[in-house]
Image 1 (cartoon, rainbow, N blue to C red):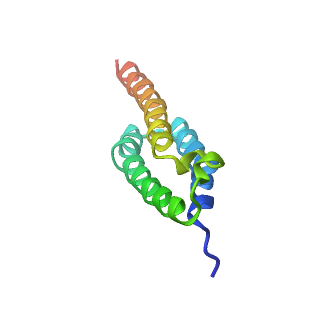
Image 2 (spheres, rainbow, N blue to C red):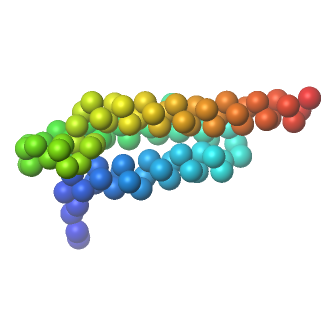
Length: 102
């Protein structure tokens, strides 16, 4: 079994997983799934990122100069931006649903 170090996992989350979450929200038809991403999935992933950043910093002090998500402030900023993007998508889809019913 291959073990990925915490810094590499953070890099993958930032470069692949977060963009995929935003992309899938824009393709999602059910607004409840988008709301679940905002209320459950993002907070869980953010918490995991803080834990990974702590492990990464212990193993590789100063890693935050190379990997943005190894910095706790950058994690907070990244997830706030992601949440705002997904909320915007959610509101647009909610508006479309209401207009479609009327």
